[in-house]
Picture 1 (cartoon, rainbow, N blue to C red):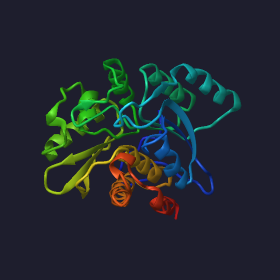
Picture 2: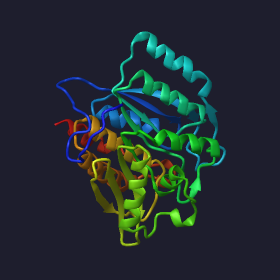
Picture 3: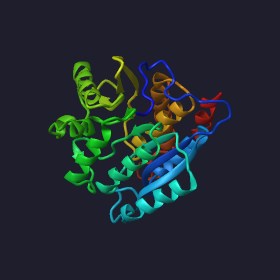
Picture 4: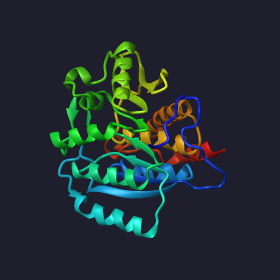
Length: 297
């Protein structure tokens, strides 16, 4: 069993002295569009982590662009992880995101077996606004749902929460007008499946706010909100989860980490809007990375 917490106001990870924790980042690598490993590596590095990538796929760009190219790395992963085992690589957290095939869930389970005390952070990247991403098959969605069970921190949006719970998805899951009671029901249902802490992301009610609801196995339930900006950007979910984990690995509480992640993504989106073709390029976080480093102070 990994290191679960019982209160959102205690550190999730105990940072000790000058030790630099290692994070296995199990995500795809995207050449253009600023998402996945291209976000996780710099953000977690700024938080004083040694990021050890486990690339699940190689993409020429994110999938909002036409004509993207994908290379599935599933076949290489057993040898890749076996090589880690041979040289004694130690890992303090396993952080998974976009996956390329159901077999990759087995490789994450291999990591859990290799590092039973490592934190398990699962960002179940597979759908949004009532629609499943084009590379995700029903088998892969099912495998991702199984991976959510036992996560120390799970960060689904509403569509992903529905998939994990086996509930129907569609336009109703686009994020509008979900009540506090419904958000509480969803987080409780996810906790009942074995997740220790749930961050339900991206709830909108048409009042100019975007809400993230947090539920814990210890019974806590609370909301953290930010200003809803009038545009969407690719990669904000990856940035949010990476900033959340950055806070955790810096020794901050779950409440502090959730608040930091929401504030950082909001401010990065403001910077993004100043860039040419910003809605294609993805979220621009680079100039704010000093704020991630400040988590260590």
